[in-house]
View 1: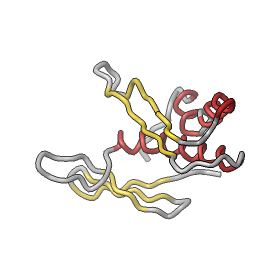
View 2 (view 1 turned 180 degrees about the vertical axis):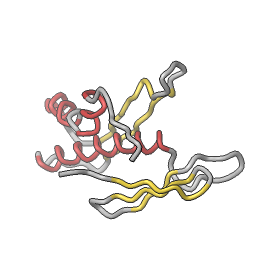
View 3 (view 1 turned 90 degrees about the horizontal axis):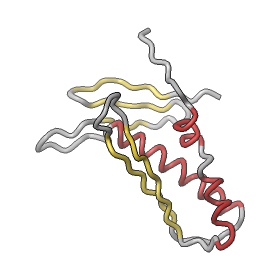
View 4 (view 1 turned 135 degrees about the vertical axis):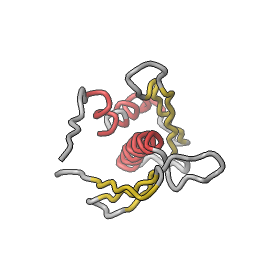
Length: 132
């Protein structure tokens, strides 16, 4: 199944993003001095995707194994490289939960590290970009 999003320029640094699968509209923008941004910037969206994917996998593990929890959140962070090419480095995702994992902690971590966004980041060597 193909996953697809479409980006359309609006004005300034703002774009509209429409997802084809879930039919959701998001906005991408770059904050300007003294003005609020109309959406997350592309780097924030990337980190959001990674944190959300890890979070979904964490939820799937906890619910499949009927492990009770009240708190589940993930914080993704990264630094912008000072070297070329332009990229994020030191990417981290910290998962916080009150779930009692005990001896299942290692299995839980292996499971959530297997989310598709994480796998894409660590296994994709090149992304094809074309002008059509």
